Image (cartoon, rainbow, N blue to C red; front, side, top):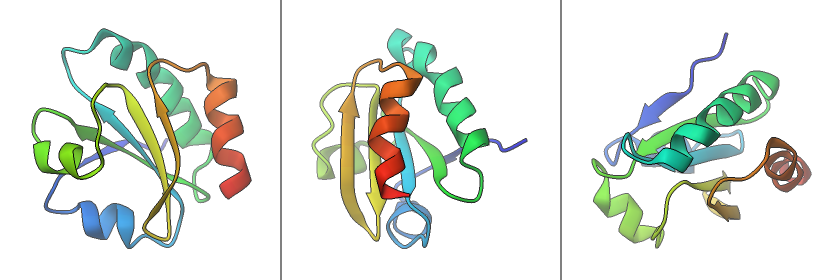
Length: 107
């Protein structure tokens, strides 16, 4: 079972931007209700895409510099990075099918 790990400002470059795989980043917070709703979907996708897409979470409250750098104003926000570039950006709760449809073309 693949566990969705948290990244931080200190390892964002190595874990996300320099990764060979596409990386889906879930910008989240413990107090955010829609984030809690989307969490099981993100974890399912991490299982299904194991080895094809790396899925990580970033705590919005603990990493304000990354939030500002990428202009994240609302959470949950999911961003797909490939070769260090943002390929997709989705804000708010999304059904699994919609998230998958945005990511699959980049895999």
